[in-house]
Image (cartoon, rainbow, N blue to C red):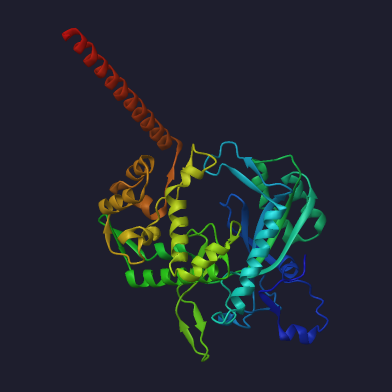
Length: 429
């Protein structure tokens, strides 16, 4: 494993016993002494695992975050990518919901690491940080190269001698059965802080929503406060010179009970947002940075555009239009839509919601999707998100074809009418 980058430190107790620091990196220690659990495997580009130290194993590492300062670290997060010289895509036969798996290029993998580290360092060194970074710290990263198919990657774990790593790589057995690409691949691993107590904004905000009798009720004050915190963190990100590029409610983590340290040393339970997944982030241009400095709403516009873009226009960007997951529209996205997309949320009934969504949709296809996906009897789809399957997409295509033929027919009738009028005029003459 490569040299440790940050996020955790060796405890004073360990350093006292072993001043030469022969332990190695946190990743090495956790791979040898942990149990691994898949956290998410529905991403198109990586599998995410949690490494938890086995019972009886004392962690030699302590947290560097102010709210958790000096607490022993017993869990780490691992993101595992299939990597290659060039970005690629493997289609999954018979799996239209996922479509395939994205092969990450080495350059994109290293760029994501560099951006994350840069953003983390800037955020902990800023005056308002007090050692609480805007994102989880990257602790280590590594790439296992010179491998062939994904099955060979799994088999290679036998040669490494780490039973823990074998367990990690075993997660790719499922992938191998479905994809089995033959071109050379490697695996790359990013090891990060595990932010215990945090959950996705999608889950946290949806838990604040109750539904009864076709009416959505939201704890407005708490909801709006947490969204203000989200906006604040994106504002900081923009000030550091970055645009996230993929701001959706699964890339924002919230802990409603997070405690900040203040300058006086007291703790206040305020709630906290952090931002994750910088794979599509980029540096802002000079012109955009000027806008950041002059426009306090710059970050709000970026979040609004990206979240609404992901929710309303997913089908336009999808690689596999036969089955399109448009995440449509989770109740936690309502703050971007209601009251002219302000942060203030009112109670709202389903018919009004459909009307508001139709106003935000800029073409007939989107309006058609809105009408089909959220009839009042399918309210649960609004709460949980929805998928447009091939049947619904077929209905959309049929509707488009009928409209096209209808327009063509009307145009044809119009031409015949004009022709008949001309003919009638000539006969009269």
